[in-house]
Image 1: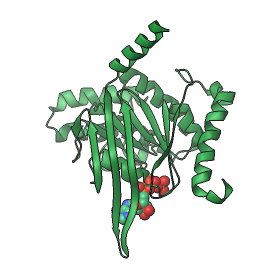
Image 2: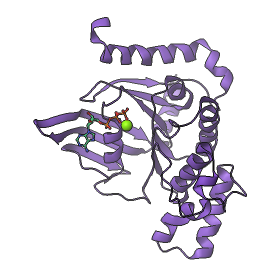
Image 3: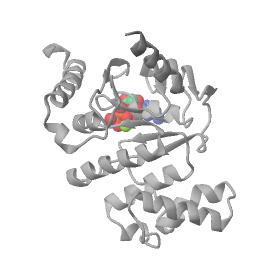
Image 4: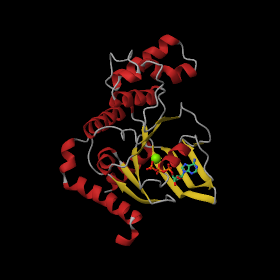
Length: 273
Ligand SMILES: Nc1ncnc2c1ncn2[C@@H]1O[C@H](COP(=O)(O)OP(=O)(O)OP(=O)(O)O)[C@@H](O)[C@H]1O
Ligand SMILES: [Mg+2]
């Protein structure tokens, strides 16, 4: 037992906190006064963890992600990323992938991926090398010269992910990145993302409405209440890695999915609880 305890401690020491949110609240200004969007959110994400956030539509998930990215200011509370405050966008520390692949239509896939590196002033040859490596990682080798309109939805989303990864930020925030995709592409993309994550070991915060996707991807699922969003449950996903499609048929998977669903149901239809 003692041996186990010291192993646990070692494990904790090996995983510093990548993101720490303390007592964060947010109120949007509205025509009839303030609209409380987030209420007393506290969360810690250890470095290298894959955390998934689920919650009813309008509960403040995107708002929270924008704040983690430094793209929006919270009304109250603090956000630390690797122990330093986040109060403006810093793509070298925190990368973001949005729901819609927000590619520049006039740039080829490889130029889209290179764009943030060009902004940073990286020389052409070096950034091409990085971009080509990312294209390979997301399975799009040979498609670098294609323009967004020549790519499928799934391919565009992979280019977006490559652009998020290319700057090599230790933290990657993803807001429903697969929502616009069909179910089969979505499953494949989730699997691909786990493969990429396992080789790059980034800290990932991932938002989704799909309970299956949440359980399949996460180390931990945070469930948010209806607006104003609070964290109402934290569910550790104990399934082993690498995850396989077969796991979806297991009792453990079903129980985890059910626990998330019950929480969502309770917060959206309190009368039924
Ligand atoms: N810029 C804004 N100004 C005012 N209110 C806003 C603004 N952005 C979001 N809101 C409000 O804040 C609440 C949370 O919105 P948010 O987009 O964060 O929710 P969400 O959980 O991401 O929803 P969805 O699952 O539908 O994407 C909503 O009630 C929304 O109307
Ligand atoms: Mg949203």
